[in-house]
Image (tube, rainbow, N blue to C red; front, side, top):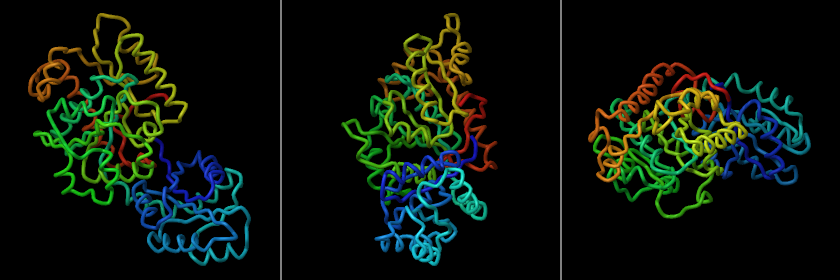
Length: 402
């Protein structure tokens, strides 16, 4: 992935946020803070490895914002704070500069000028910021346009295989909810929604006692089976949660199979490095996943490390896996055998295929996919992570269209 920066925006109007997001589009991603409290902004800055914080001021009433700027600079002295305002008021300019703000930009300034001004601030502090966010687990997402058993089956076995070498977390967020937990015979009273609601309490003790735990050592956190809405949390909550979780795990495998094209889905995909698009040879599966891929490209999701996995693959039946990958414009990561009886045994027994059918072609193929992850993670340790994707390092070096 290309190196990009992340920025936090504390704005009073949607017009300002829209202008800033557009102006900084080529330089990085602007993340709106869901709170103006110093503690929350600092927490978000640490979570995403922010390169700068933008604060919008109202020339008539700016006392609260100046206190916020003062507190942010005291808490994060090496993190540049940039002031945004509708007019360049000299008194306001002097006040904010005395507080320690590093620049003052008029709202509506051309994008090239905004980027140039911000870039002047980043180099002197970039090494300090990147050092804060280099450590942490890597994330692989299993994605499919069609809900069903295939995505949780792949995600859980991929996570189990990686767990054999490194502490691994399985985030089972796909549709239907909770299937991976059922396949592994696990129950847990603590869910992904609970984790979002208790961000400040998540530590090793809570992970050990609240999260699902498989006998292999794999940790599992699942979406609750009861209905929920994305309005229960904000994008900042998700960034902070993922940042917290990656401090505790070397690898995180996320099942996103069957999820609707929601803001939550796009947010999650924006925070992973490896995307495995899971599909079958059938026309309906290829068609729906092609629509999904088109949507991801339209939404500017980074696909430089995305690839295809063809499930229920029959080598003698057209279209072949290579042709499918070519039509998608993505690399072929692997193929998976149908192994219907072996999969059914896993679904109904609470035992993985590694235990029930260790020599099955499906399990062997999943282990091969897992080797891609563990081997590549060693190779990228010395490379700087990127933007919000600093949450992880690139998993498999693929030359794909983005």
